Image (cartoon, rainbow, N blue to C red; front, side, top):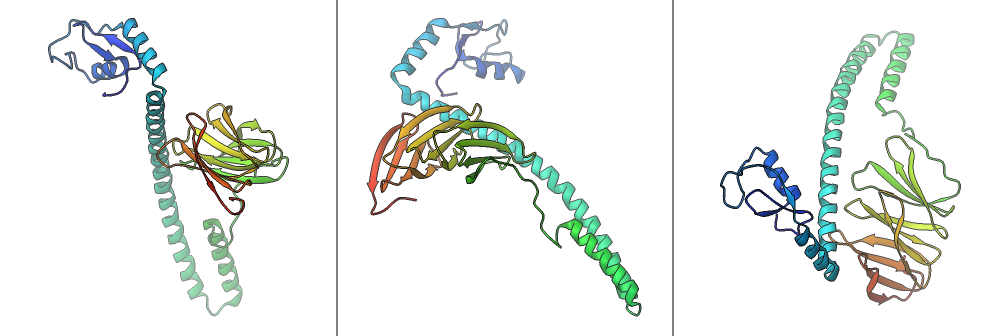
Length: 279
């Protein structure tokens, strides 16, 4: 796989592989060694404890390697989720197209009735009302709210999940909420020290960043809603944005500074002075 092994194991011929990779090899119907291409006597895998310990020690001294690996896996998970969401939307879209075409056919028939009843005003009105009703079903006549989600105080910020399936909101009640966009159900919420002013999803969708009026930047685990790391700023954090391809962040602050931050370590890499608050 050309990646750091997570679970090194030995096959019956003494070769070492990552467990997940060699199992995938066997599941594809292969009964040979990927290295020698010779038949294997069995598919039994034996954990290689000594190599596992060596890998863990190596990663302990090279944390940046582990961060890159975690980011890679996060993007793989996000890609799989996006592919699944896209397939679901395509199915829904195809069904909607069929329903729309059927509705258009009905409207064409109603329009023909309207033309035929030109000399009968009462019938015209009746048919026109029916047309209006059909258009209303299509959503052309007016726009309706799909759903409302109550908060206990003002909603200060909103951010869509990269797949469009969830929402994150920050509120003056000092809470971050993760909401199912389909059902409107609050799936998870987490407390902050003050008003949550801004929120942004990491492109992998596995993490969020929030800016708060308690002068703190927080990194949130989307799966648990728990705070992974906090960073202090000189004033309230007005805005936050993720780099599209890494774990870096940019924040704008009331202390007139833009900060570039490594989310993996929490370290501020660079500060840029501005003449006023960075919003």
